[in-house]
Image (cartoon, rainbow, N blue to C red; front, side):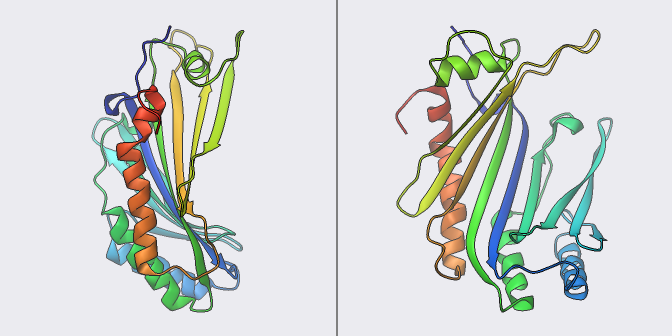
Length: 242
């Protein structure tokens, strides 16, 4: 029987994405000037999270280079305009940087101010859904991540090389989707394979009829934080019926 427990200490990577669904959608090709202005505003307002504006014929993003002495560096998008709307990415901990904590501006402040600015620039667009996706990567060494998930969450018999689960535990006003991904990877040479379970929590509003107010956005972000802090680990460890 597996002895693994999901804990804060076992988290090797912690990533948050907050996205807004907008109606109607906007096209990067048609909004190059305003998107460029928005990207520069992000850079000036939060230089610790946004740095380089990247514009293509039909795509737009803002990237940031993160570095840690002795661990390396990585550049990644921290804002992306998707077909559904704007997405903000907060890489709090990255495996490629040795799992070191990254100091970032406060998520709620960035999301609320940035979506308000987005509304000023594109007043014709309703923001009908806000979703916060929190993703944790847990190191299960020396146990098999697939065996941990299969034993803890299923009644499957036999051996598997990968397993993917997804379920929604909704509240009155919110979807609370939890997903688990695990795979037993082969060793590379003398290197031990990574033993990782990826757990994601996607909390978003169920009602998409109205343009979201600031208070409603804050409620969604608060619900996402509260679920991760108060319920998720009990659910993962089978300690309580959450």
